Length: 128
Image (cartoon, rainbow, N blue to C red):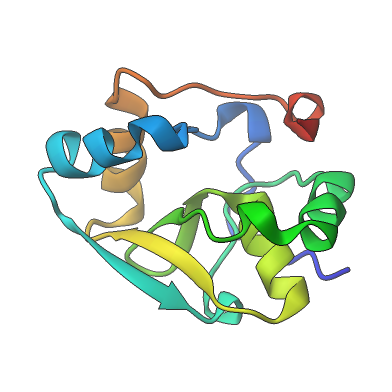
């Protein structure tokens, strides 16, 4: 299984998460529509999260039903949310759906962390 070395190594428990039911509100209202929807070769994306759950990645590779849900990235190709989906796509060698924020990494993390529905999960909480 391919697990890229993170460029920044942010712990999973510090990474912002946004549930799919809030994604449209986050992108269109909180971010002011400053994003594009694209399919990306997963090899072109970069990790900033420092911990990954191999079991969750393998489960997603075995049952690919969640892989059509978009991940959130930013300028520079950094993965902000959806790291396990991205890594499943990377290992399966299939394109990943992205909602690409048109802001740099710091501003994108600030946007995500300031959103009212953002939450965090520790690595052991990401099995479900």
